[in-house]
Amino acid sequence: MQQSSIKTFLKTYLDLRKDKDNELATVDSIRKGVEFKGANLWILILAIFMASLGLNVNSTAVIIGAMLISPLMGPIMGVGLSVGLNDFELMKRSLKSYFITTLFSVTTATIFFLISPVAEGQSELLARTSPTIYDVFIALLGGLAGVIALSTKEKGNVIPGVAIATALMPPLCTAGYGLATGSAAYFFGAFYLYFINSVFISLATFTGVRVMHFQRKAFADKGRELKVRRTIVFVVILTLCPAVYLTVGIIRDMLFQGSANRFINEQLSFADTQVLDKRITRGSEGAEIRVVLIGEEVPEASLAIARSKLKEYNLEETRLTVLQGKNREELDISSIRAMVMEDFYKNSEERLQQQKQTIASLQNDLEQYRKFDELSRRIIPELKVLYPNVQSIALSQALEQTVDSLRTDTVTLCVLQFDKQPRESEKAKMTDWLKARTGAGKLRLITR
Image 1 (cartoon, rainbow, N blue to C red):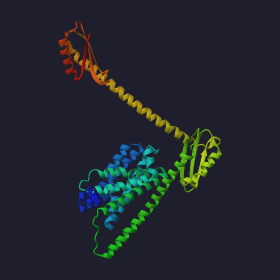
Image 2 (image 1 turned 90 degrees about the vertical axis):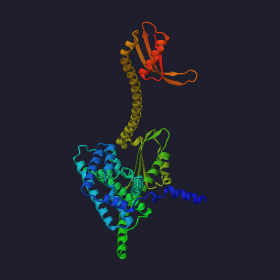
Image 3 (image 1 turned 180 degrees about the vertical axis):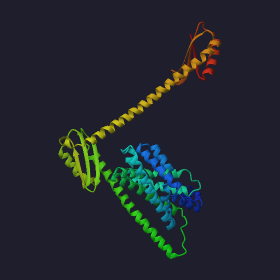
């Protein structure tokens, strides 16, 4: 009984078919997004220019804006849909559009960075050259969200969100930057990220189409249907093989980085010595952990013990290089400078935030003084008419604290100086008038 209730509950809340739109309308919507001619292509070119400019000046807001107007998702989702529907014609159109959009995007970005006066790569630009396993998950989850959103009656604003999250445009712009500056590392790193994102968005679209049981394309000629299926499977395998290989490489690099960092934290932690800088590399020439120590020199025997424990972290083939004391001439000055600048930047950021809070508080206090000063000036003419004996006025806001209960309340204080002290009835009238005139909820009148 309980199992049946849980099944009913899950089916009620998680059934995708409940909100499913007309299947033909969904397929038609994705098909229209595949075509890249005229306006669509010009929008893409302008969006690439915007994103390149945003990367050039390191403006996240401009990059996000460019990704919102970019129509890049169309051909990529079209590939996934074509595989799910066994539609070879749609696959050919989608792949053709994909290659055209990629070519135009990289060419546009290259032209921009060739004529751009700013030649140095900014942080947002650099971030698009180092793909991680998280990029794979983001592309997969974003693609699933996209195809589910497109297949529902209420489309919402999911597609723009997917376009931002999967970040297809920044890698293309960075690839253009790599071509413009002659940097192979920038070009291949960024293009690698773009390819990974594209493949896994397509894979997510295919998965969504199959989970939601979209009707596959029917063929009258079964022989042709078999041929089309084989062709699609061949193209899919051809596309997925490099992506799988690259993804495995990403996972291995991530595991290696994690193991190396654990080794440094656990085995290179010595009393009176601090790790100033660390560099973890893994390439064709082998793997290396390069550490700069500062403080009391660590004996070679202790370092030998640390090296012997590399195998415990699956780092048997990794070379450990420790720079300290006697080999100071080998220290990487740029690394030390980078570490110092990073600490300085973090401390400066903290101090800047504290100063901003202090300034905001002082500005608020100053605004209160200005408010009451201006209010005093405005009511002086009225006071002269109503109470000719008034010589001076002082308005301010104060915190009133009850001694017994320690309850704090805000109160407006008004100090009036007279030639002749007014009667109590006149003071009551003055208090009521001042409350109405100043808009104060609580007012204390002090007369002299």
